[in-house]
Length: 68
Image 1: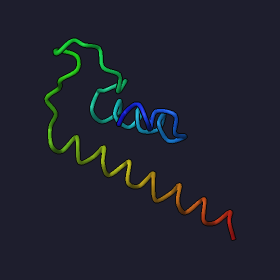
Image 2 (image 1 turned 180 degrees about the vertical axis):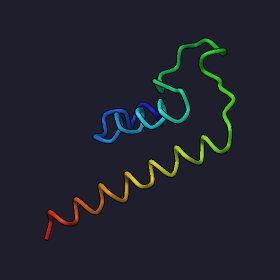
Image 3 (image 1 turned 30 degrees about the horizontal axis):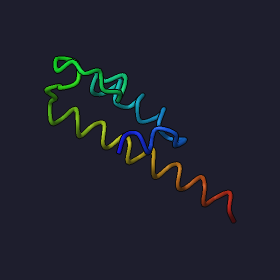
Image 4 (image 1 turned 90 degrees about the vertical axis):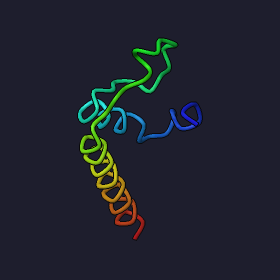
């Protein structure tokens, strides 16, 4: 799944959100369990999801605004 969406325009924004809220700066697998597997606080995940959702709403709003 990660391989298919990496080229999408929003990919960099999602990585930035993950970096800010989850201290994840790449979605690439390293093959190292200590790097690839992370324990995360539920509140941090919720904050990252909220920011991604808001970004999606904003992008959708802007796209619809320019199509009118």
